[in-house]
Image 1 (cartoon, rainbow, N blue to C red):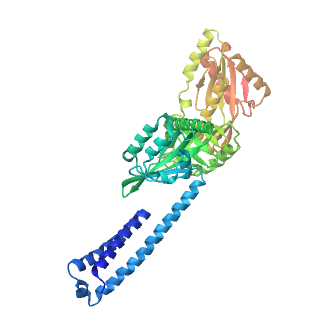
Image 2: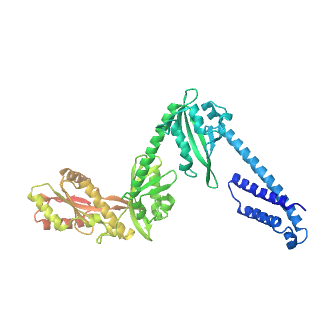
Image 3: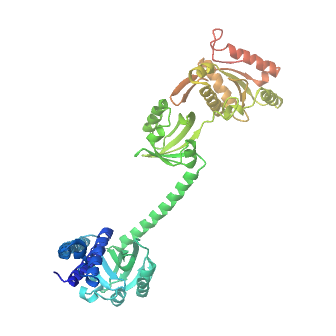
Length: 514
């Protein structure tokens, strides 16, 4: 029978080895500790309360089997502890060798009392001491005697500043946070050295046990200065970038960035709201999932053919809340792989008459009579161009009234840009009839020259998504000075307009001199 006190000692040793293994692995095995505690509890009962408790409960010889079991566990734990320690030492040796061959080849390790536990050969060269001279001594005391510190993190400092920082580190550090500390000093031979340390606290079961400082010596001071300047520029760039991103996201415009390299898009908050998305980033494929399939090809082709700084404009339909909505996208390729664009809804539902603000806010036939009268009264030049969009009915039948209204609105916009100037305007005379007042003789001259060609120069090719059609336009132009009764002459122009592009008169545009 093995002495119970020996088994008690062995069991306690197993507990100590388990704790040691947990410290090295930085991981606690709850099950293992529970079992060891159970073994310890059993042997304590045997030693201090009843030597025969195991034999009484489980039969004769149970204690002997239990003792052999504990001895076996003890041998296994010795092997595990030895293997774990050996592996840890090998890892440490490999790490030190790798550090010596890397740019981070300067380091020191101190305990919670600032005493040096290990230090690199390169750091010893800077302070002019052997390893035996520094182990166990406070790092600040060593540096005070051997080097003269001039700067810490680009701030004018001295050895006392480092000593104060070193002594207060254990109270002011943040767990798992790597602190960067750059020290500029004169070494033992009077040379200026700069070492940038990355400092990490060593924690054991939540308690501070020291720190490790791993550093890189900056040998070229000019290069160090350039690196700092670049770092400053980088920080400034990141700050500007964050501000621009914030402005971009908060913009009231529907803005989008398109990255052609990775096929990803970033949308402003407004653009995200247009397409009912709660996030600002999505892939181009996710964006195309909203598209009317026929409109995808045109957009892909347009973006692929874009040259640097080239602008583009696209109109397409997106399915928003189970309803197709027209959008207009205008953009510019600002770099080889980046496009900046605006995307906005083309509102076709807000206005009761045509569904287009551009049309429903136009002046009417009552306004044109007053306009012509004022121009004549003040002896001001004015040509009256009466136009009619002749094939809107066919467009409505082929593509729907919504598309027809979009075509009309776009055409009126183009006419304003091309012919209206010097207080001229566009007046709506009916569903597809408009009057454009030309107050610039040069604009009228262009129209007269075009009339002579006999070509339908007022016709326009219209494109919306994959929809493409020619909008056919007839026109009659007359100078306000030869108007008699304004209302009667406007009616006459309207009647002549109806006869154009027919079997009676195939001409698309004429000038009325009657």
